[in-house]
Length: 578
Image 1 (cartoon, rainbow, N blue to C red):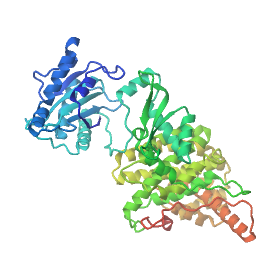
Image 2: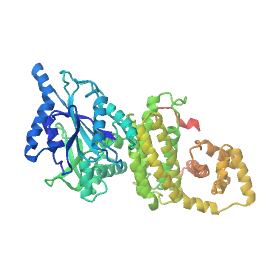
Image 3: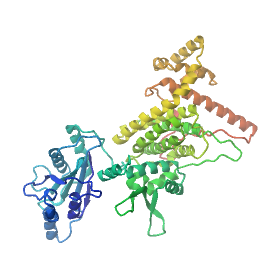
């Protein structure tokens, strides 16, 4: 159940909308279900058509009487005296009866301080129902005694009351908001989408397109040119001085109003992080790199996985660990990494193996909500991850290589778990829920990618003697998780520990110590990808050392600089926890 408090100054104007046909004739049977005093109250929705406008005037005058009395007494207008709170049930909820909606309205005006129970001097209010799934509560915010109501933080108080009502009425339990969520589509927008045969409203579709394009764009010009290439109409808001762009709006192709004009949505109205200022902050937080002339193109998927590993290490730090001296700085970096990781999901969905892209798109869409919270992100501290995400698109990578993609997705699962845990500990309920939803799709994408690779490795079954020796090494190196590892049919693939360039037991121990294994559904596979990465990293390091000794000018291996925060307020180097 979602309340949305706002204020205005035109009582008659709002009444005309509430009792009118709606912008798309979506209002059906508008009528009053509750009010401060039902006896003798005119109801324009249930009156003959020829009396409709007259009753609207009467109702507006009646609601405004305390407002006019205060204005007469003080000799000045009462500003923003119209209080408006639509209350909508969640999609899939049952339709409430008029009596149930009446009780919802009474509880909300009480909880918000508009008209407390037992207070005969409260504000005048009505609740109008003109659709199955919602009501509009309207009040004029001057009490009968001439004072203004004590309704500070009314939006939060309405949210809290709705959480109680949901539980009591058996409705879907929503998480408390923090005003960083993208606006929900209105019933009118949903009705229009149904009429035009679209599965998504124009607002939802534009939001998804804009988020994906922002994740892939290197600069502001590319962002707007890509949107235009997709057929999306862009309207700029130009500042009065200097002619700079200070805002923008987008319109879906073919989405027009009754006059045939495009229906525009401002960037910030699509999502808070799509406002022009937030967008510029994200686009500026990049470190684009270009291989030197004549050098080999690095494997960007491996490069992204290396950067993601450092992100996971940092995000898994506990706020009370001695390596985190400044918790505010730590939170700002984790929030920035969450935003950059969301962009990586969008770009990976475009370049991953084709059979996994649908699940990755779903994971990216669900994770969008986890990229925003009240914590202000230090985007520059996640520049390496954001750059790695964009380079998946802007260079020839190996996304079709199942082993490379599986390694990245395995690490991505740990990152989502870490970010979900961080949101949960900070009380970000909606964000934590979104991360958990994303995790479901991400794990499916991982399985789709990893199963063929692991099946191939498992087919190379070592001899019984080698298997027994490997089992003993697993039990010695990872005693706490050995039983789960050895119960996994794919565990013999860990035989590659013997070809890692160091003693197998040591290789397994170091792989297990990189991060905890408790949250891993299949620890054998997690160790497999860690061993594979460690082996590849050593090869890269030996190659770089050999080139440095010989002064070779041939291609250098992809850099493995950790994506660690820097600066005086940043948390300490997370690699010390290895």
